[in-house]
Image (cartoon, rainbow, N blue to C red; front, side, top):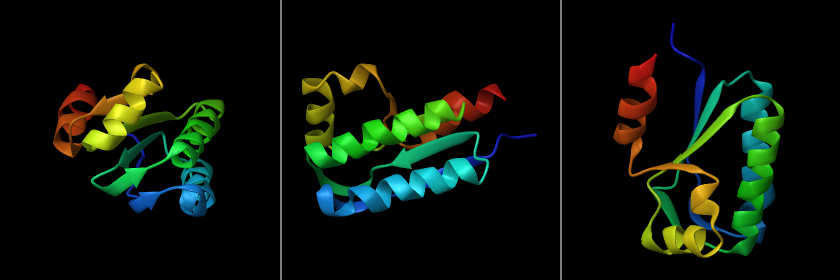
Length: 108
């Protein structure tokens, strides 16, 4: 049986105005029993420090519930933000959803 996976696909600019909505979506996913959450950033054009803060809070929520969080499809700007803040060492990041499927789901 495959684990319960929830896909979250934010879009546009992930900043202070969208941060609480984003965190709420992650919380709802955890509460609905997701065992893994994949945040697919393919639709996100830009993320600022507020978006990054929301992502860190989301990770704390997910970890507290014993759920796993993964990220895929980050653009160059988001990747640079992750590297500058060393978040690339905190989050498990995949190039795209196919790479996630191959690495994580093929193990099950």
